[in-house]
Length: 429
Image (cartoon, rainbow, N blue to C red; front, side):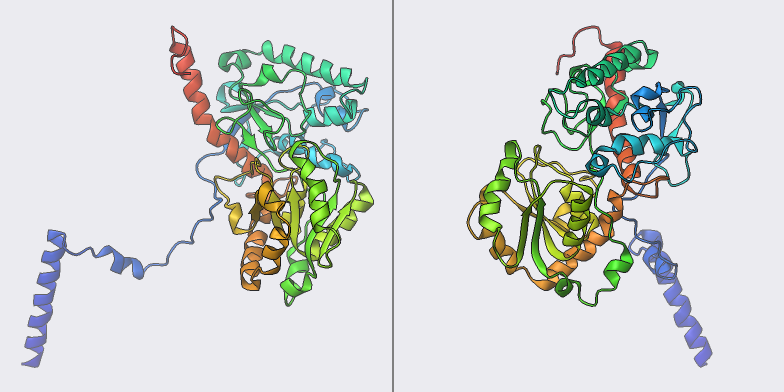
């Protein structure tokens, strides 16, 4: 008897549930999903879609590798196997080596984790990479604006433009789908206006007019850090990293700068001499870079005032040292900011705030330990996005840059396709 009753109740419940599902008043999917293994949450910086197809021009080596190795011959094509390593003794020049790492990544032969792959048929390309080491050219052929050797830097730019203007693919798009790195503030300075339609790889917009460089078409790159990265073992060995980093605020660098960078001298007067602050004038030499490496690793916060332009390499040195950046620059642009929220691991002060006596130090001295540890952990988790290496690794700086380029391509294609059919000047520009 009890069995019949139970069967009747179960049958009745089944009928009610079936009717509810049919009428749409109950969604059974959440209950079934609970029984299934849940997928991992995607990283905020995760690749989507197919890799960018990039055609790299085969330029004579004087435009790139010969600046690293003058004895390099144009007879043998450059490959991943004969590509010279970036010299360990390059010192401060390393910060402008983005152009080298992008070229190297295309020579790598591709891989499932690469955001860009090299194609040898230009008709299959989404973008065209111009492997001209414009920053190294300035550093090699003209170390200042009045150096007589800058004439060779200018001549390289002239010859490059002659080459591009004879290219069917440059003319097809007006250079809009061409990627040109120029991370040194003086890179490509003679003929910049002739490439103002291209996708420029820059570190900020401090030396560019608005009609030449802008966020809508260009990519902001990190400087290549010059201090040695702090690995996980170096950090995880600390039982209490907050207490282990005994210096509150660290700065070591040149205090004589241009434009916004003039603030460095004023900050020196406000900050130097405090017992918990290390503020020291210095120039970038191999030995001084080693000293800065240790100093950043032993500090809770690292000061990043503007340099000759709104950004400087010091910010990225701090990131790979896991030292919370304190950024003072009203016009700074930051790399990968559509994917990375810098406010989660950096502090920002306006120039006006920073020059108020005691303002920065009072904020840092009262900064809660728990909040610092939270930011420090987030900083460690994003630091791999600022590593340049060969071969490139998943979501490192090289792959992040190529993904940024990929984000620009739809607008490039829109502009190219519109220009092909317009019979009158574009009315909305």
